[in-house]
Length: 235
Image (cartoon, rainbow, N blue to C red):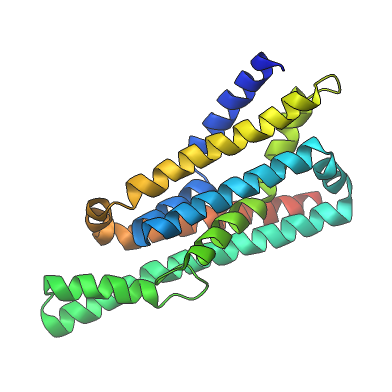
């Protein structure tokens, strides 16, 4: 087993994990607005998607997809559309909460209890599973799809393994690398799920919910637009 290779993979993947992106953004949103069990389910979903990307890259499937113009184009369109839809949902969530707050303030003189109620109701009014009370299954699928359908994740893992995993690398090292990346992902996103879902943290961030939603919406839509722009430029 090549320990130096595994260490290199661990460092690169750890840097990628903590970097701001769709995975980090969706974890912040779910962990600060949903139950801890839902947040943990989302963390598991993202980690399973990372494992899937790892296996696809190690087995050469990702390379086949990237090499096929039609398949890769389809992956990019589907992935960008999903990210754009998620971003729109997040922006819509923030606007709904602001609207509820304004309505509550004008009719109830901005009472603290009414403002908090407005936050909950505003979030609950959002379609697409981004707001309201999400089940563990919804949390898992949201995390899974956010990573799995992101074309940039496919390219990242394909590039990473193409550069580091040579034909001489043993099967045991490949298996160890898959387990390592899964473990690091579970540890990081699980940490976010537990820390950000604490009641005191959620309470403190409740007032910032519209801002969080807006930032997350911008992140998702920016990634989607970048993918669409790249498709137009390379067409």
